[in-house]
Image (cartoon, rainbow, N blue to C red):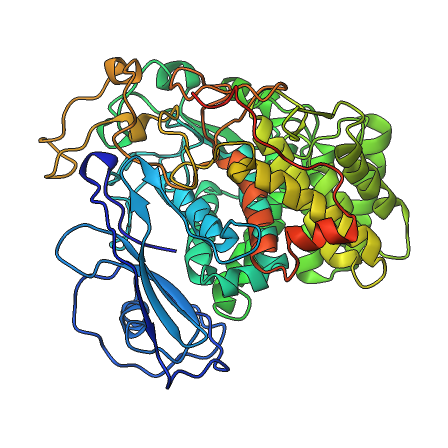
Length: 591
């Protein structure tokens, strides 16, 4: 989604709800709606676009289509806009012939009125999660940028040979561009987009998400600046973390780091190949030439990674914030995605071979967490889908999900019902596991509905904990008592009415140490999360529990898409007896 959001300091409280029953609206008409930031302008009439049409966000067609939504009430659509000269956001939803305008944001956070029986609007959270990725953008921002406190930044980022490598996403609350976790996140987001199109289309997030994936794919292509050289990181953690301020104000050195034939990075290249292959699938029909470009880069990077083998963090000494434990899992992941994209048998053979080597040489499958350093679990699901005649891949997936459901093999449960595996970003681990469970549930439903219900209801229970069943929301700008002090430089820096530039107040470590809420709301960001006793404090200085990162939201986003498109509900889970753990409110997470 795209909409205008003022900072908490200038938020205006809207207290009007208007529902207009449109008798002439046809509830049977179907379309995927474009979303855009709309000003108070005269609507422009335009014929409905064919279902599935993607518009370039910068194109005139995109803008026209966005404006036409205001009057084309025959379609079931959701969009966001300003209806007056004041910067007050409102939701406008067309569903089954009813046009609704209602307030979304209140001072200090958001208040969501959900229409589903789970009491959470998963489609709304899906859009907010993509809004977080928009806030993480680096480089020259497009004209339709909807983050009022973000502007152009890091325009001087160059590869060692001088090639332009602007763009991409900042990793977390800092301003490093770290392609290893970024690529894993992009591949995971693309996977959720491919698997759960019902959730994306029903919540009108297709175009917004596709635009976000194109943004990061373009960056990966730039980083592949010569045949065998690929920039895997921009910025030195020691230099970057010594500065607290806006991305737009950066003046410190931002050194680039390459992998190549002399400095191998099979893990990094396998991840990037997976991301580009997955994203290319998304654009096959809407922009086939672009899809072929992404596929070509995926093939080339995969070839370099398989030819010159080694860990990227052994080659890039500044990569110590995301060190890699192995690389065969990443090559498995990359090969599996290339096989899914191309159907070429050699990629499947490669994936199977790397899978066996990962088990035998790297102890693959011993660590029950799916993340940037352990890609094998995602590869297991892909191989179970693509190679159904061999049950070992499905067996591994089931072992993984059952450990998370039952709380074994390093997974425990908090008193409030959260599956917990690690104190650093505890919610990312369960969000990622929930996505594995969701993808597998969708694909096994036709053959084992009992397992599908068990897995999907577990994923639902964990998302309910995150969104508020534990007594608070862990998603910025959503639900009850959401985090307001997240560890994030840009969100913590004040912004004057005039916008970014010379009139913006200074921002430094004094802002980091303030006890007041962040002046800018980082909508959709999933914070690290609570300890194994549900304890959590919303303080900016706690980067373990209260920082955000692009990998934190990735699996979570896919799970939101699954739930947004699912006809199931928590009540049905309870009625069927599919609930293993029920999230509940606790009292040590309120501060």
